Length: 184
Image 1 (cartoon, helix red, strand yellow):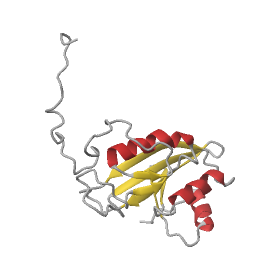
Image 2 (cartoon, rainbow, N blue to C red):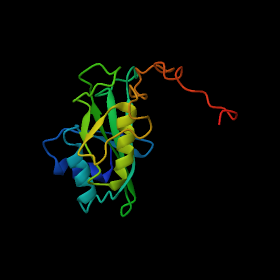
Image 3 (cartoon, rainbow, N blue to C red):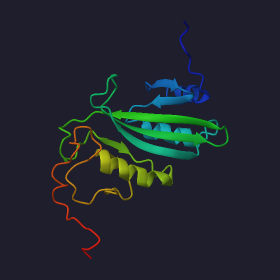
Image 4 (cartoon, one colour):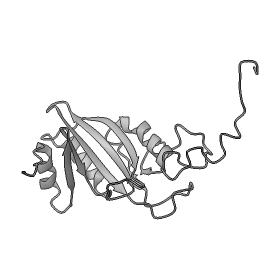
């Protein structure tokens, strides 16, 4: 059985532009993923947007992932993914950066290891998804114009999409005031 090859034309361009950076790449169901080191992901994203041979002019999605207890080993516990689209070349590419926490993740303490450079300067549409990733996973984005919670209230005591967060929460359901039709 032959080993599948990655024939996405953008991969060679990125390798040539960043000869000293070590990348990982994979493909599944015609979607190619490029894994970049966290300290280089912003430069790679800028290259993919600005280089005329790439021209990834649209940020389709920006998302966070938690790989705690994932059955397949990953390069880091958390990941931030950027799904990009080039309208000119009709190509898609997912760029992913993995992050490992340096402190216990069960609380709300700020972990300096969970930080990436914001992509808001590249795509204005990154603002709200970055806020969501920050709110739900606690991953901060350096240079973000308005990094604050977007789904949970300001003083919420955790990041609820982290897999070490209890499914029933930490008491917040017990403190809700029940509002029904007759309590206006």
